[in-house]
Image 1 (cartoon, helix red, strand yellow):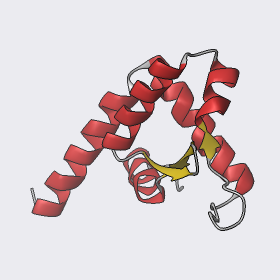
Image 2: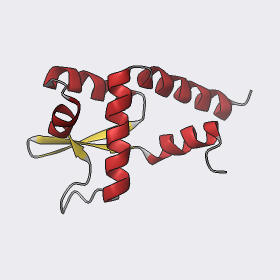
Image 3: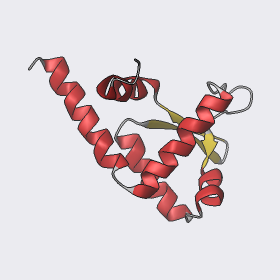
Length: 108
């Protein structure tokens, strides 16, 4: 197996581990859906990423739990987190989305 294939397999395995938790899967679904609806974030204007408070309201999950799950998703490369003032916003990582789509062959 080539180095790139091994690296991609490791990245996908990490993503699948992160998404194997129901709360993380739901948070990731909210982020992806939000980013699809609102497009790419322009942090100089209004951030298009999901704010942490959105997860707590939509999914009825407490702040410490949200922070833990968001950290796991970020470490797996599924999302990136950006701070704007006191708020933190999550954005889906398009590279990982493309890797997942290619793995599942969703482009056909």
